[in-house]
Amino acid sequence: MNTEALLKSRLICVAVIDQTDDAVPLAEALLAGGLNVIEITFRTSAAADAIARIRGRVPQMRVGAGTLLTGEQVKQAMGAGAQFGVSPGLNEAVSAVARKNDFTLFPGVITPTEVMWALELGWKNLKFFPAETAGGVNTLKALIGPFGPAGVKFIPTGGITAATLPNYLAIPQVAAVGGSWMAERKLVAEKAWSKITTLTAEAMKVSAQNLKS
Image 1 (cartoon, rainbow, N blue to C red):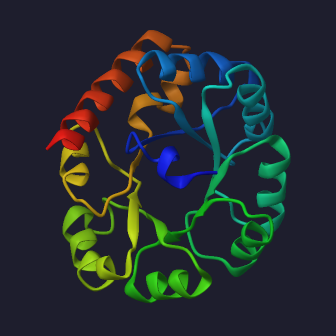
Image 2: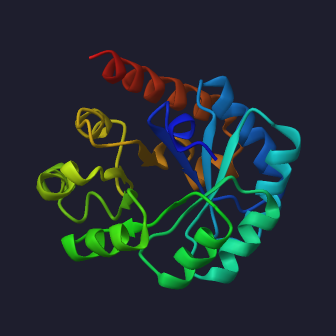
């Protein structure tokens, strides 16, 4: 998948789906708020089916699989129709399966050593996780110092909120921000679709302002 097009909005909604039937309404709620990128985490048994449903019924949505821990999960995600994958860490098996299948992957890093390893494996768009716990914007800027010139871009995820979103988007080397606040697990379970649309629209407004500046 074209990574530039995928990250154009600079936002990725990270969602945990417990009930497969919630997948399509969630995707439609995000689209109504202006966002067409979702990462469905492989933390529940509904994940693969949820990805397949959205791909089949909401073609405008770009759908990824998150929390990919093994090469087998990467295969499962691709089989379900995922267009990209996200991993919380850096794993050679996950990387190898993605590379072999020309599957867009955002592996997770948090240290300079991991960034160097990711570069060695051929990845330049890296998930920075867990962002807030690991020092947030300050730690990210410190990593950008040595690795920005190498073309590394980061996708910070983990603990980011609507309030801290602008701080990350203000950094040019942030390709996109992954956030769950737009569609928290509780909101999805409650089928609070209008609330999710509102939160998404607010986040998209912040993203648009940063794209202009």
